[in-house]
Image (cartoon, rainbow, N blue to C red; front, side):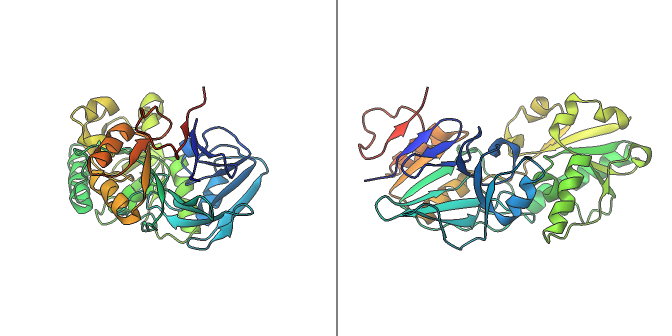
Amino acid sequence: MAWRVEAHKGLRLPQIQWALDAAIPVARSFVSHAHSDHVAAHKEIICSKPTTRLLRERIRGKRIMHSLNYGEPEQLTEDATITLYPAGHILGSAQSLISHPEYGTLLYTGDFKLNAGTAAEPCVFPQADVLIMETTFGLPRYIWPERDEVFSKLITFCKETLASGANPVILAYNLGKAQEVLMGLAQCGIPIMIHEQGYRFCRIYEELGIKLPQYHVFNPATVAGHIIICPPHVRRSSFLKHIPAHRIAVATGWALDSQAIYRYGCHAAFALSDHADYAELLACVKQVNPKRVLTVHGFARQFAETLRGLGIEAWEAGKDNQLDLPLDLSLTKKS
């Protein structure tokens, strides 16, 4: 008998009654990391120890929390065990390897990045029979430039902006991306301010042992001469009114799209992502060496087609996959 996977606002493994990154509150769910789109008020949660701490900033109330170390198997059910492995996405991000004597091994990557930045644990892939992988950037055109090259261009943007009498504003999500940008700008010699929400997460990073360069919480009274790191949503708020003269840059993998500056309403876009690029997605499959692959998020259908073209059994999770879907793999989508 093989693993069954149900896809409905997250993933569910009905044979063991556990969910994977459920988007709505459920009885029991593995939470791969603390980004808000992967978090809900579940009654029982399994996650890494850093994610446990970060979740306290995201969800309130009492619940059963299983806080695990990487690489240490824990009993999940009477028959199944779970082992967490670093995913390289943000601090505390984890993949889950679930082992069952009847169904075999299943690896769920969550969001991952093989070539991790400086603000996340290095990614580690175990081998598994079934691989469920995120494929946000699953097209060949998404290949990240070298990190040092990206930050060199970003620093040039910041210096040129300051020389023009304006403040450089860098759009980066408060958790994970803001800390990565901060560390990448460490040697530029320009003081940095961070949006209040990002500042709180920086303090937690330091609490968890991550050494960050000097930074300050955003203060409009002393903003002149600073780089400001803030989340993308500030474009739709009054936040930018506190910075009379500014030029905006965004740090995102979508910077490789030709319309990125218009999509984000900014002056420049830099290809810095905390997700795997196309080459890293292929490398993941090679290292895990699964018997079958299920893809989720982004270009899931296209990447599954790519893998089938390479002779690998692969399907987009939760979608109709025609009659050539193996009979021992149940992919159901609830209505």
